[in-house]
Image 1 (spheres, rainbow, N blue to C red):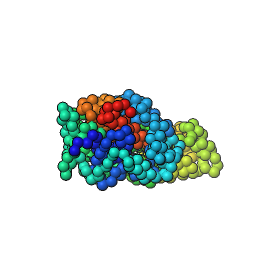
Image 2: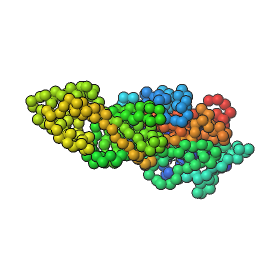
Image 3: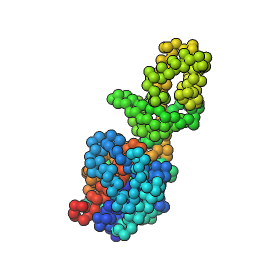
Image 4: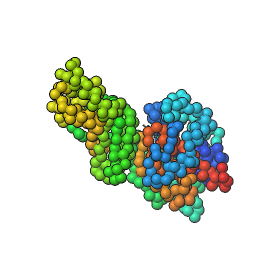
Length: 417
Ligand SMILES: Cc1cc2nc3c(=O)[nH]c(=O)nc-3n(C[C@H](O)[C@H](O)[C@H](O)COP(=O)(O)OP(=O)(O)OC[C@H]3O[C@@H](n4cnc5c(N)ncnc54)[C@H](O)[C@@H]3O)c2cc1C
């Protein structure tokens, strides 16, 4: 049997493609290597699934095709994601700009998609890992091989995702399959991931969570990336949402320069002058003048962080407030407002939420059909675009799946939808 449409991968983008193609009347088979569809979705947003964002903008995405995020968002805005899910019977709940299902459970999003294909000419077959795909361009026929045999189809959507956050060691094939069709695929590297460092003082701050501003300056063009939020300090590095947000440019910087440095503003609530004035007041207070600087700072920072900051100059931390000169107080204020941290690596794929890199978008139309192999489409994270934390990656998965599903169906049915 020759299937009109096969979708490889029953993840977020694959299911969005299947619902869209099926509703248009196109018959589709979804192949999934795991025993269940949408397994990764259950992990998202700490089990709550932050599935889109009210404030989606192109600058929340990274891609070598710098114009693509803007063009994509013209085709698929927040309202489009919300109405796709409303039509599936799923209602949103908002936490700031982050959008979750009203149940606050990822399981509900999964159910909405799986129930959404019921009654459509769509079927899912799990436990089928597609190994190789070939294409007879003249016959307009794709052949997909798996361990137990093969399938044939007229249109093919690759929605196989990436190894981000995935425990099984089995080689992922979506990137290899696209390469075998002659597509250029940027190497997949972890993003939205912790940053590793060995600065010698990490054991002091291990376990601390503290609200900071974290900055990274890219050497190549001097661009500064700045994020604010709760940083988790650990014995092997730093994590938390602001760090994740910087992990894409930090990873690139590590690749290009061999190192990356971030700067912490450890006291974002006070300007440097205000911090200096506060410390100066304490120095001049009869109650505090005799206290050591490191003790005085406990009024501003967790003790373990103070230990880390002064680990290379313990003497400075032990000075009494009254013995500090104005210059020394300015130095301390400056250090706390711009504490440097050398980054030596990124966490691995299992720890990451997405991978940067992927198939070069310039080789696909805006409807996500390959410019190299007609009838071949790609959707989701395997494409060279990744977003920040906050629902941007799932937003892209839904939107790209819908675009690919719609354009494959249009081509099969010979009409515009
Ligand atoms: C822990 C964690 C938390 C996250 N939280 C969020 C969040 O809250 N908000 C957000 O926007 N994003 C989040 N993400 C990112 C988001 O989950 C992904 O960007 C999104 O799932 C990508 O969708 P996709 O369809 O491209 O890939 P996937 O959803 O990974 O689906 C790909 C599917 O293809 C299957 N497959 C792969 N190769 C083959 C093959 N050869 N044959 C058959 N099947 C195959 C896989 O098993 C998988 O089921 C999170 C990711 C992780 C890991």
